[in-house]
Image (cartoon, rainbow, N blue to C red; front, side):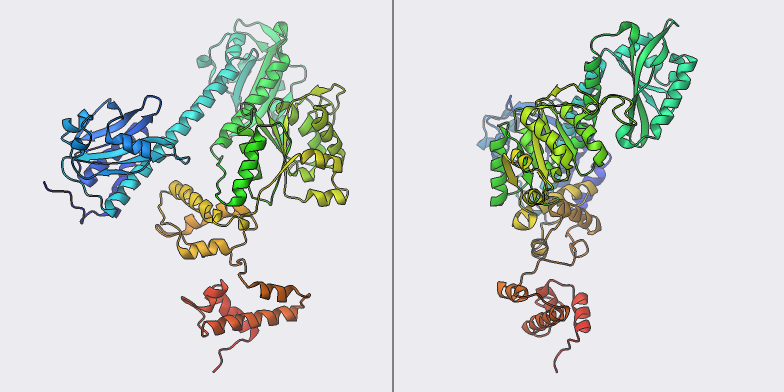
Amino acid sequence: MAEHRFENLDVDDALRIIIEGTAAAIGKPFYSALVENLAKTLNTNGAWVTEYLEDAQRLRALAFWFKGEWVNDYEYDIPGTPCELVVNSARMVHIKENVSTLFPKDPDLCAYSAVSYLGVPLLDSTGMVLGHLAVLDSQPLPLEPRLQKLFQVFANRATAEHQRLRAEAATREREQKLSRLIGSTMDAIVELDESLRVTLLNAAAERMFNCSQTDAVGCHFIRFLSAAAADKLITIVQELSQRSDGQQSLWIPGGLKAISGEGGEFPAEATLSAFDLQRRRFYTLILRNVNERLFAERRISELTEEAQYLKDEIKQSHNCDQIIGQSQSMIAVMQDAEKVAKSEATVLILGETGTGKELLARTIHDASPRRDKPLIKVNCAALPSGLIESELFGHERGAFTGATNKRKGRFHMADGGTILLDEIGELPLDLQAKLLRVLQEGEFEPLGSSQTIKVDARVIAATNRPLREAVKKGMFREDLFYRLSVFPITIPPLRERGDDICLLADVFIKRFAQKLGRTFEPLADDCVRRLKAYDWPGNVRELENLIERAVIISDMGELDLIRALPETERPNAPERVIEAATARVLTAKDLEEFERKNLIAALNSCAWRVAGENGAAQALGLKPSTLNSRMKALGIKRPT
């Protein structure tokens, strides 16, 4: 029996077919285009892509192309099939011939006259099987390198679509929950656009105005207010637009006179808040009929604030990454995080800027019994000193100039959950005592209030400052330091994490390349050397930004780090040179002479070859142009 030959398989042309055939499609059309192009490119009888139903041990075909026709509603149990090997081993399975004989319990193989089979699992970033991609044919199918590479590209495209659809479903579920949350409140909630036209009504608002959302959307909200109330609302909107970002909500003094669906007026307490979405301004107006006041006033306020926080969390959830690292230092960090997550102990996360302190805090929270409650984040360095107390503990109406409404603090919002105090070293001394009381007794008073509020919030603090030194200098309370550092965790800087640098770089390359529709070969030895030689003062955050820049400026195939990576690299000089340079304080002239001798030593070792392989520039980690410039400046000339 003749077998497939792939000497004339043009991988680049096949890749072009994939991109052109699937670029404009998502969901089912994407899968259909993918398998049809796969079968035609490899000239096989059939190709299909599936999703894995783990609990049922079944595979459901998202698209199945066989001999020029679509096989609809194809779903089957995997035991006794070659697909079982793909799913259970989580690796590519290739059966060149006699597949029907090897798997006699699979009736479909005989029905399709199958001789050969090739399947590959679709794996997410954690290694979980999402489904698989497979082809079968009535001829023997050899596994050549070009075929394997091309097949893997098809699989990667299918995996990306699987993950996109799952993320989309998760977002849709959160939006549905948020919609139910708003819809179940007892106060009327009206969303308005920048022209004060209605964009959304909850069920309570429909009852209040006796108007369905379908009829109300697009109408100017002024029609639901008295003339005086309409002028008042316009004035309030103008006042709100002049406020800073942290003050985009207010209580409308005296409320509004609203008009019911029957035409009668009624007094309504009202609050107005503003938010921006996709470069557009929207307003949330919350109304409560004073004649029908219910005891749920405080509850609805809490739900509104939590709903806004949920919106922020939904936006941020797509950018959350997992902590990546296989170095011993990072393994120790993750082990410590796993242990402390199950307790209620206060955690102090230490580390340089960009090492991932906030990500570690979220990891601890997600692994704790409080995972179903919010993680509230406060950056103590980003807030003006005059607003930190209000932000942390809330304030009463009239507590200070501009406090026109009562506001809950972050500790109140974190009740039952976790609060992350980032850059804790920047907290003013006068607030450190109040924070210490919250940690010790779980209570505080909002600004301008004498009422004590009890909260149950776990505290995780983070800083890149040496707090012990701050304690010695009197800039940080010693008792607060010991109360925060019940369980300290120090995240090592990236330069001390060895091969983690390249591991993270690979992840970032795949992420940004996928966004741009590009593919890159594994990191070359020169790129690895450059990455490991650099000092990474900005740590993981700097690495991520650098890789994104490199992916943008590089051509398809090989990553170019020469333009993206800063010139200054970590010196690899022997310890004796470091000791000689640091044995005493060197003058500028000493430093110049030291550099001159070092360059001459490098040039001598390379037979005065400046550029190219084994040249002095490569040994010094410099560009040839930079080395030539320094030689000229220092008067170094090649000996005759």
